[in-house]
Length: 475
Image 1 (tube, rainbow, N blue to C red):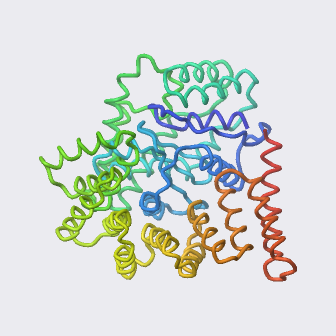
Image 2 (spheres, helix red, strand yellow):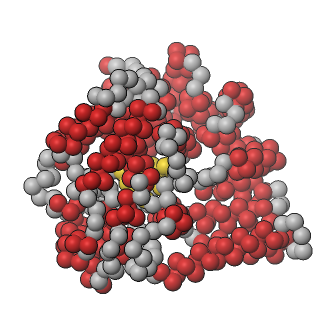
């Protein structure tokens, strides 16, 4: 649906990210609004293409943290028909975006820019409000299909934006201005509504509502360098002095100042910074210099991650053992220490660390998947398969990596049906649905006449086939 393609591109803050996600054709221009089911289908399709094309941070700890933070805010909505999914895009640009159906992406650059958890939560709360109030669906009312010129200009903008530079802004500005802007009913009223609901969510979840104000002021400070040259149409989340003032007045209505930052936020931000760096040797030197001046726990952790990455696992091990002695046990520190031990071939010690930590944090995603990977390396295949199967049974939105590990375990056990079925889900989540269908065909063949497994496999194959056909019809 070209009109939705435009809206999805516009539903992001005014600082544009490199490597803009390639968004597929998503429906018919005959519809004037989206049903809840259509929103969910659109979001699911978007997410599959996102896993297949975008540079997401595929790390269990980071995924679990951002998901938990988002769900904590969502729990304070009066009612929601969506299952929200939150994910981190490995881009240094300050950006966040919402997609119908409850899919919310946050760039690494935005996380690094947040000084505290309340600031990060304020961005998530704002995007949650956009989804919960169905702003995208409401925005397309009365619009019609885009011309071929408009579609071509948007596709060109996507291609150019992946290379950075201002050309993508110009292409998108011209294409939208000449083809669709007069038909898009996206107003600043939506932003005010998202701010109002976002502040309510922050306060309800015991975060400091002032966090939204503080982050707005950061964005405004950045945006003022662009205002003279950036087209108004691209300012889809305009941060004006008036908007900052409104947010201040709303935040002042709440007396609480929010909970103190948890150590996990600091470790989360440090790990995101390491993931986002393409010059890790330089970042290690800079981190060491900062650590020598301010030996904070998060800098200690960041430096240990970099030492692990840069071939200094023994140094990282010593640093992490001291940090644990000083700060106490923490799942993120355990995982980093287990990584140090594995890099030194101390796998038995790493297994012990995982086993001890899982007794305290039995549902921790990072610990579970890290332990499962190590079990596979140690040839404890049955234990790994049992662990991963239980995880898949209790988590409604597993990421591709979980299915990949489970498929590996079942394959090593010689269970062709389970392995092929898991690989199908892995490829389907990564946007390769035709490959997923083929793996399901393999699973069906391997199942033979099994009356218990065959019907479910056939049903799943047919479901994914329908999705493939629908996507092909929309292209």
